[in-house]
Length: 402
Image 1 (cartoon, rainbow, N blue to C red):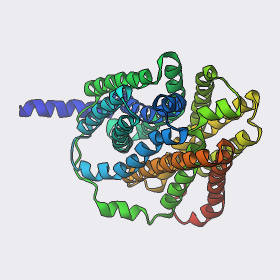
Image 2: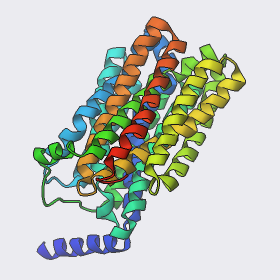
Image 3: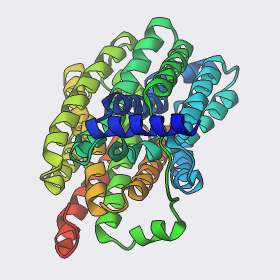
Image 4: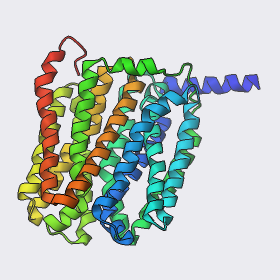
């Protein structure tokens, strides 16, 4: 038995020496699966609201509830995980994600659907936080950066493709089929991980003082503030992109899937561009993203009243938001290179607080003042992020320079 354990350890070390890229792809699939599940209701907002006879604002709780719970669970999972093998944690979370999607597909009432979304929130906080620190354990040091980019590429791709995938599936076979499809996909990811992921034990657990120490770093503080503003501004508007396209720009429901697919392709392009530049010019990349989000969201409100202008603004919006996650993650990793797992969990927490606050506030504004006002208020948040980066960033030259 002891000889078998030693042999398994040698195999694992050998894989890491040459780069266990299949395992990296498997982890990237897990981040893609959980973020796609989180974003899925955005493209299905209108049909779900109709199915349960609720307002679009109330239906927005499908986004805000799991997001706020993910924010709470992200640091908790890192602290509570202790020395548990990360392979076991990821596999357990994928099982829960599969169950959450299955419950969503079968939910007899909106209350049941929200209960399933609570499970999604737990999975979101756990998977994203654990996955963020695994790249350096699966590949050699010289390959850690591209491996990390690939893992978080799952987040970026899901952020821009999750909505159109849901909209397409909902249009073709109904919104319940979209959740059923994600349950099946989660099962495939689980099986893949069980096959290719090696054992991932840890020697030491993260303690609370290590968390609190990061809050004293100015680049970390600014990075978290930028995350909150950019993500909240985006989701305050984007949570309601389906009714925006139909009610403001005048598109029929049959066009929504195609339009959101175009948004997704634009977002992947934005992620690719930002990923190439952010490592060298992180601050400039974030400034460009903040300006892009401000212009496109406000532009949608000002000139998005026709189909042509609405489609153009949507594509430009996708380009701008596509680079958000990879650029912000790069900023956080540069701000605390000695505590990547910790700042990743903080980043995940604030990212999801931004989703929750943005979608919740957007729902209240939509119900009270309409879509046009929601867009204008949403555009103000990335504008504030732009100003913060311009005026606060120079004061950090004595510290880490993202």
